[in-house]
Image (cartoon, helix red, strand yellow):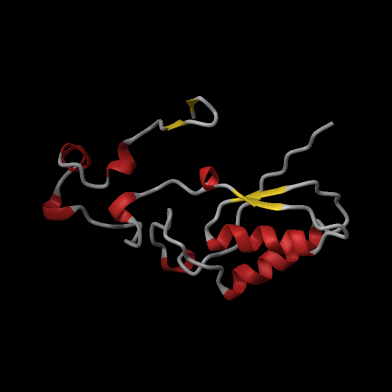
Length: 131
C-alpha cells in the first residue's frame, strides 16, 4: 500500500507579518525551524521512501528536517509544481491591502491588477487536467 502524507512548511519569516507570500522565497523563522525539527523527530520512526518539496526555502528546509531524521535518508526532490500559489504583484503586500483609488475587486480584475487572485483554475501540465 502507498501512503502519501502532505506536510505544510514551518512558519516563514513572512507569516507573522501577515503578507502575501506566494513565490516570494521567505525562509523559515526561528519558530519555523523549531517546528521543522519537531516534525522531523515526529516522523523519525516512520519509513519514508521519498520526499518531494517545493524549491522555496521554507518548504525545502522543512523537507530536509524530515530527511535528516530518517535512519536511511530518502531522496529529497525539489519540484517547482509544488510551489505555493503565485500572487503576482501582491506578493509582499499585507493581506489587508486596500485596492488603489478605492477600486472594487471587479474593477481591479478588469484593470489586470493582482490577476492571480481572480484565476480560479490553472492547468498544470504534468497532471494534464485542471485543479
